[in-house]
Length: 165
Image (cartoon, rainbow, N blue to C red):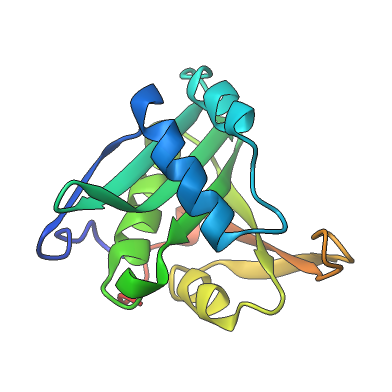
């Protein structure tokens, strides 16, 4: 896993708040029109502070990315990670993933799991740079019929360096 990076220039990251849900939901609809989470799902996730952590990344006060983690020992699960296309390739996704993995460590998780679309090689490459390995395929997991690759990171083996997307 990469060392904690400096956030990309001009980007601020903070914990997601209830007042962010409307803006995040608009991004969710834009980025995942078929599989978008409903507003209530974000509200429910934010209410579970003992087992969840959600972040937003902002540029000039506008949310450009968000991510979330659920941790119920011994497993942490990346619930979501999204960067708007205009800001892809600037290291925001890598920085958010770094923070989620570090949060899993703080919560003493042994492993981090996630699902990624089989037709999203960019995200798969990011996860592999962090040391995630594919362990399973969930056939037709997404509403459009796409498969989900289940990937796992063993935290006691995750000290390799990643690079920004």
